[in-house]
Amino acid sequence: MADGTIECLKDPISCAKERPFQRGTPPIWNPLPHFVDVHQDAQVGNVKPLSEFFRAAREGTLPSVTWIAPDAQESEHPPSSIAPGQSYVTGLVNTIMRSPDWNSSAIFLFWDDWGGFYDHVVPPKVDANGYGLRVPALVISPYAKRGYVDRQVLSFDAYLKFIEDRFLAGQRLDPSTDGRADSRPTVREDVAILGNLAADFDFSQAPRAPLLLSPHPPPGPASMP
Image (cartoon, rainbow, N blue to C red):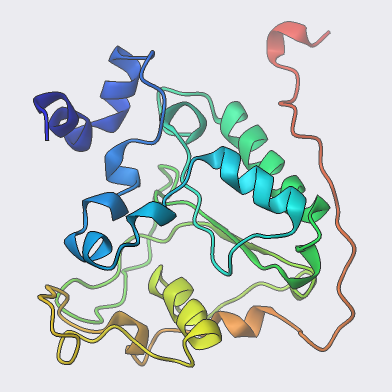
């Protein structure tokens, strides 16, 4: 990688601030193209520009799993304003709600940082790495339980577990059998304390109609009377 790319990997926010003409998702937020096995499996072509998501949503051809990461300006990371990020996410959710795929969709909206608020709860010690600080997350789906607060112990591994259970019949990546180097101390999807996101849904209910929100940021103090 070029020196500039390495600098952006170390500090993507400063990189975006100092080089605002370089739009796009910082590599540290979109690491898949840098994994050797992604190239070996010829999957790097699955990393698409966001325009492909909008096209597939309109046509009702969204893939089984879509992972979307924002660019620095819309990520809600400082020094960027949170308003563009909230508008960006609302637009993505509205796009899926308008899509022919809405009635078979589950949207997991989550953040990788905790917002700067003090968290007094000590994370569970599940392996050599343990869990980190708590972060917010929302489940949006025509089958999501209304007003439900999930009080299970969850981590980012719960999203992988849900996907593997749904589309791979519970098959896990396992460093003891996969034949590839794997630095993980454990297969985190199988940790006993990890909850199951299937509890957030009621798939027996009739699919709920979309609830579209305005993607426009609210007026700022300068425009308020």
